[in-house]
Length: 112
Length: 125
Image 1 (spheres, rainbow over the protein chains, first blue to last red):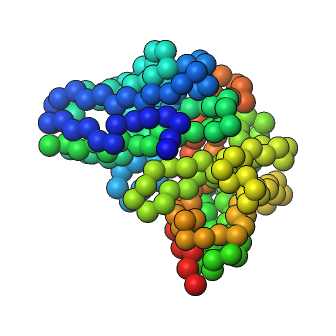
Image 2 (spheres, rainbow over the protein chains, first blue to last red):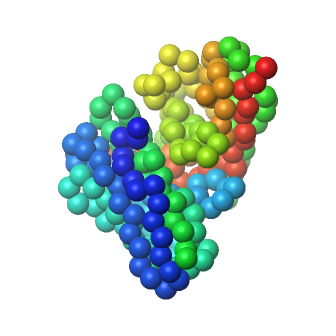
């Protein structure tokens, strides 16, 4: 049971917009700690996609965006492409006995 | 370009100790700006943070694994290592090493910006 809750799967057609949620609590996201997002393509290591809630590392397309509000965060992908099919994970800091650094359970994005 | 490479046995017997090393190239492990971490991923499952170390030697462990985990750093070799004792089949996973960084220059809001390719460790007799 992950401290950060993500939907197991989401899907969308090419060109559409999809969002992936990451729900936490008062000991992590709700306490003001940043949320970071990773993309894991099949058979590869995770790649940093968004850091500090909404910042994109160099090379990450602006189709990917992140936001945070209250005890939740979201990753939005616009103009969905076949190459976006991957697993996505959120990560944050947790001040309870679960931490300090925790990942969400992951969301499988399927491009229809 | 920073690179991380995991190394160690791919097969470990139950009840024995899993030992992995991460070699960092293209940058210094002694930089005060970064932490260094281990993450694992059981087959078909999600990511689990195992633990992290600062170049000074300060360590941080996942409470669920703390009693079995030791992470150490060798700045002279630009390496850090993971030891996980009393392993069982549940410890079978791909193990990743990664660099942790914070754009807020604090010890909390750290993210993993560089990852090794990962190494599969199977626990089996």
